[in-house]
Length: 227
Image (cartoon, rainbow, N blue to C red; front, side):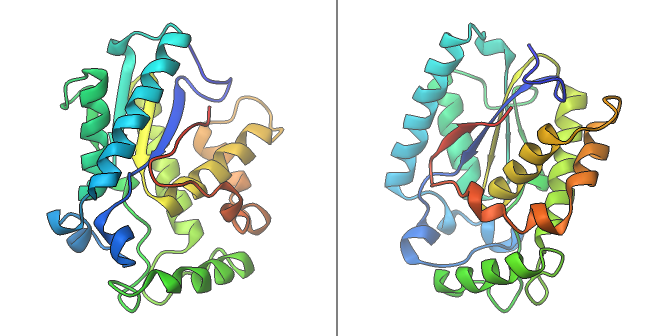
């Protein structure tokens, strides 16, 4: 049940539901702040996560994928953990290894100490810089290329840990749009055919690809199949 010749599994991405930082218009991107319960899901976000779980359940049934073949990998931030736990509950999947696993590589993009806990209004400035140079991040923060590298490593781990599974990646807006960007480019890339996933992603981790990550923007609570 491979999603494509490039992958051993089928993959969905899910952005966390609407969070308290979303409601308050705050950038919460550090591990220290992101794992605090005060920055977890808002009530609307719990409803979005539940709806995403129901949608995923329908897609699994349509594709005749048994629940035991589902794997949920999620960012350890409170808003993503809440989302993953809600989806697992809807699917009646035990929220424990091996079916559900927190993965630090899926954490939010760190926008740097100067932007931490500042207004969401700062995001467009960073995205404008990304478009010019995705290898240069905000002061003290991660570049698009940095995030692409750790997400490629996360995919390698998932591919090694499971085969023939339906994998749901629960993460954040920027990481998920960057992930979609490199996966889309890697699937389009015409290589020798014998390259590893990481090698294929490395070949497409170039300015012309990474600078376009906003084209894959994803809404809170949105579920999207990518492979």
